Length: 94
Image (cartoon, rainbow, N blue to C red; front, side):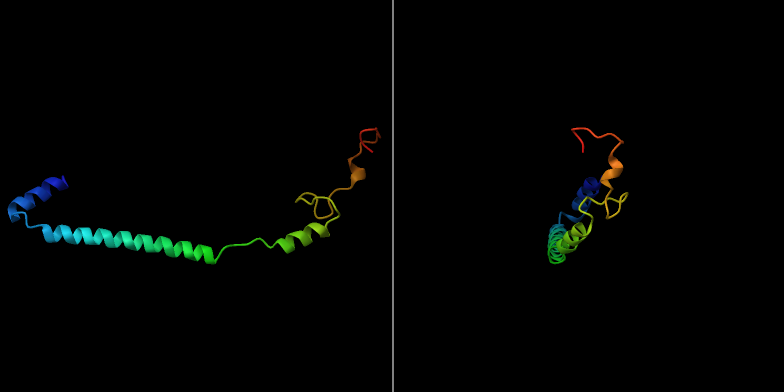
């Protein structure tokens, strides 16, 4: 529909829309440059503010436990190996 209106305006004005077209093109290019600059700025910000894992704290917490893995259910002491046996000793187990 907009193309029909543009064509009618061109017929009425004698096709002197060159300045308007140039202005629209310049605005589109300016918007494209602004979008690219915003993306570049975001990438630079993200690169400067990268999150890094605190490996020394993770290692210290792992070494602090009782030698076994800690979970939210067992805590940092892990589980007692004696509580895992079912009352039987076998050659496969202990």
